[in-house]
Image (cartoon, rainbow, N blue to C red; front, side, top):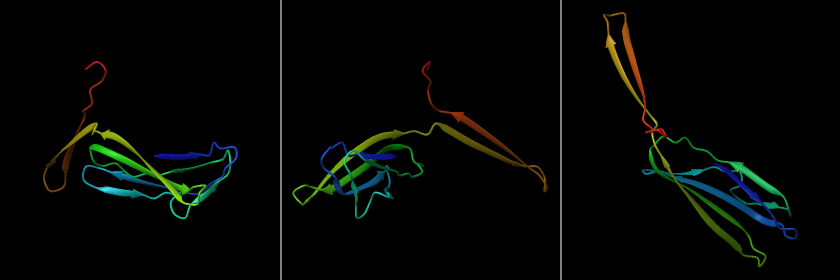
Length: 122
């Protein structure tokens, strides 16, 4: 996932910005390491920072990407907000394997690949 933060202010610097991301699948939850996570970075007026976080998706079903942003407020405290992105993961291919031994020295392997998705005509 691409994480981009743009400071649109003409007068204020964003102080101690920290961005963390988590991916939740039907069975597990992972923290996605981000260079924007930790002690925080300062973003001057009109500037931007970005990062890419990733994780291999190996499980079908409902997934949720949770992004949390925190920064120092003008009053001196910390402000935090979270955004959740829900998306469905489907398995587009079914791969079947059939192995047959033919004596002691050879073996035949047959692979069948089937596309599971319905097209616009279906």
